[in-house]
Amino acid sequence: MALQDVQILIKGSRDGLSFFLDPHCSFDDLLSALEARFMGAYDHFLQGPPTEVHVHFGTRYVTEEQIERVRTLIEQHGSLKVTDVIRDVFDKKEVETMLTRMSLKTEVGIVRSGQVVEAAGDVLLLGDLNPGGLIRARGSIYIFGQLMGHAFAGVGGDPAIIVAHDFRPTRFGIGRLALDEVPRSLYGKASFAAAHKNRLLVLPLKALRGLPFVLDEAAEEMIALETAGNS
Image (cartoon, rainbow, N blue to C red):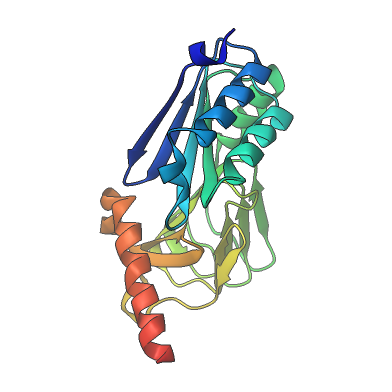
């Protein structure tokens, strides 16, 4: 296929750039056409502050190695950073893994000191997580009771949140971020925690309906407070 026939659509939005890549050409032709775009009319995308890129492969099946080659090609130009890869086709093993991570493990009762609850997906606790108790999940954690122990969500790096009717954990974390303090105004209140822009945020439960925009506002407020505190 001639490079000019390879369809590559680039759209900009408040969330960054979206690259829609032709699913019908060969993978080598796709790489060549993508490189040609960077050398031509899209030079203005390479200037300015860091820009998030969302790559859409559509119905093309791609391996992890091929995804990495596309990521490397894009990120070597300017300040572009691939943050999302969206594809419609997966192999059987990948589907099984996704279904496991989407599963919900339900616990009823109290998780007491010394007890550990682990899950490959989400955890729903209908009860309390006492001090000394631990919940660790690859997905999100939902507690319809008191969160007083240790709660760690998104342990595999997947997006996750921690929700509790009474938020007063000993320690909590999402991914690589962890805290042992909760804002005084939210201590013991119905709240949730989320990771955003390399920060662990705790917000009132009612703010969940404002995701993801409420996280941008909260992160900006935290940055402003940190800046004021350091000045």
